[in-house]
Image 1 (cartoon, rainbow, N blue to C red):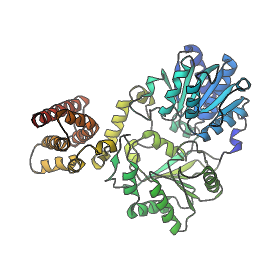
Image 2: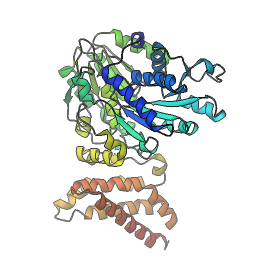
Image 3: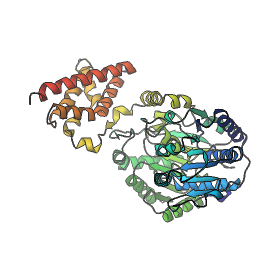
Image 4: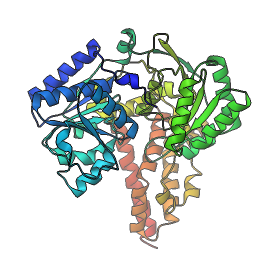
Length: 503
């Protein structure tokens, strides 16, 4: 549901005007072979800013602008904002097969997958593009488009300049990061509502980390779908948020449906929404949420971007995440300020605040941009102990090839603590882990080379185990961990050769 009033012509706030001027200056000074990434918190007005940049670029350079989005809601919002400031624009969606009328427009807004399909058929599908603006630039799906616009400037815009895939850092494609106003600054200046944070300790034992680095949906469903977690959620709501318009974020659909049932039984006005709903049903539910006082909306994934409802007064994180980007996206849904709203409540039921710090805390985004691995590693290793509680979940294609029953029998923290209790050296836990990996590979390997292949497939699993060990001994320098990994793999390889070469 899009609020038409949002797209009436408006005067930019002083910090927004200054940002536009600075970015235009950067583009002029650095020429065509320059890509800039711009960071600004959710609620800071990114759409207003990059729409004005697009308008000025068209006027000053005499070239056209292409804006990339990954969701139709973002495309529509952007199009209406551009129209409000007098920029002729066209949305390229799945229904647009040709652009015979492109001379009538100075700006195009495209869904990334749709545009990629058109460009594969005709790499000159859109002509005379001088600037490509990428909304929510942390998503990697946009990279496939860049090859078609190597002569154009690229301006990426995001609240969190961290790639959604740590193997593909943003500094591969952007020459520089410009950091906008901080969350605390926008709060102090009256542009964002402040968050009053309430944390509830939860037992996350049973969560598993998937190959994407975050907790798996299936393990989250098991943790959050049970009766006790439902009761804790209800208790937290009734203690802090009764009578407020509330948005609840869950990891899985099953959990969200149970949340709706739990709150229904207590007589609260609540609806559930997830990505399987039709556009019609989704619009109807969002309209209900907007117009209903004290409404509660429990959702899964779908409302983290492209959703703007300023009347939200409480955000509940009924899930755990290891993604700093997702953490900020969820909380940002409550930060819109209104004349009678300068605060919102944040209820954390996933130890997320302990993992990432308060939403308002200062973050060195320059460090995140230039050294993403170091930035993420330090935050996750220093501020969370969830690694002890979470198991690494092997991808399905690897589980089918390995003896998972053997692997599942070993838990690094428990084995380490058992060694210490017996008066043994903690390092024995590493030796026992190596023996466990060896047995799991030997039971399935046809020969030595097959064993090496399985060992390679288990590298992330091995790395996860050894990180648990270094946290147990509070010794986690990069050099020591590198030494551990190299020694472990060398010894495992030797054991496999000694046994499998003879078989």
